[in-house]
Length: 177
Image (spheres, rainbow, N blue to C red):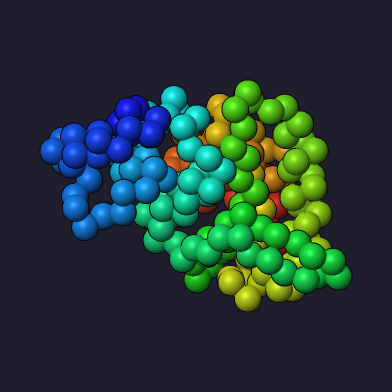
């Protein structure tokens, strides 16, 4: 997998022989990493091989696995232009994602969470078309997991756990309506 994600296209056949991927599935790096996660492989050391677009693709596949409808690069005019990396929704809730694919680890998480929350609040009337409740969410390629001002900041390693146990966090996160 490492060889394929690092750019060695010949490693794709090995992934197929191993059973990680079949011929009908997409051979994009974001999808391959998603499949690895689905098979229980710790993907945290492989995320570095993805560019930001592939990172967002990976996030879309994870949300889809949990039954969410997903769109990316949502552009809205809410008094001024706003773009959201990923919006994933069900009948009950829409997660509005700010995806941060950083090589070194970043650090200004509180600032990022605060800016994202302001942007989501600015566009809440338009975001409510997805679901009756909206949750701003920051997903990071780094190993960081906490809630800042009601906004979850979740490592890509833990996004599945977060989604599976979201009901446990409802009292700690901002849910807009």
